Image (cartoon, rainbow, N blue to C red; front, top):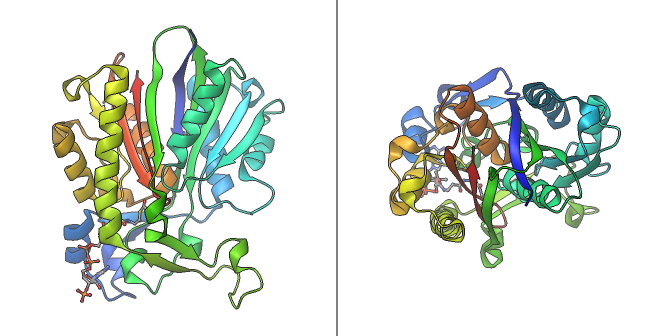
Length: 322
Ligand code: ACO
């Protein structure tokens, strides 16, 4: 049996910080409202493109794994903010890291894109199609944010992290996952102005408007992540007591609290970045994982639960043995 182990990791976080106080200089909002409703204090804004962030994170992940670009067979770029519609963004990373022999693809399931990308790479490793993969979670939301809409502008940030995943004969890496999509409520989050549906309409390129039902998303996010977590734990024959660390998608501190409390996992087992980075969509889970690893919160044998949700509404939960 072949398993898929995470052997390297690296993040590329933009240095520019946008605080709640900064937002309140141009939006009718305030620090108290944002912290009490979301837990967020600040987020990052990138001055470089998504591909450029991904190249930096990928080089760090490769160095961590002791590999070079030429060793990589597959690149999966998880994001809903591609630099260009065509060509795909993973090919931009491939060129820059010298991964001449790699297959390259983009995966867009919004905030769950990193975890769906991890499943894609894991499946290809387990079936022997590839041996070494680079999986990237990257998002650059600031260029298409509607900065006049306080409902959404306070919630998001830019960021990136990447992991190297390699074939292993030990029972480690991704033990199992539960993937799903609540398509009946797919329009609870929609960014109008992006995509071919808007070509030839009276829409200026790069100008978007956000349709967004926060309370509906909140409800489905909690239910979806709890159900996906329960399903993957059942599949893998583990219980909430076996979980050493939860690395969740971080769209709102209250969502995370509700998910772990319903799943029966103590709050101290959760890795949080939402206060410092807000919701970085696809980058949220890999950045939190990278920071948990760098802080020594992951030990050999640790069992990590990674639940997430995103526009679609996609939901998933992954169990990883370290
Ligand atoms: N500052 C001050 N007031 C605000 C702000 C703001 N930034 N944003 C909204 N308000 C106001 C609203 O206008 C409303 O005022 P009104 O009652 O006069 O109309 C009031 O605050 C309450 O607004 P609600 O939307 O009811 O606030 P809620 O408690 O639901 O919190 C939030 C909003 C934080 C978005 C919450 O619904 C949420 O976290 N939802 C889930 C997360 C989410 O949807 N994230 C984005 C998508 S992420 C994804 O991955 C799919």
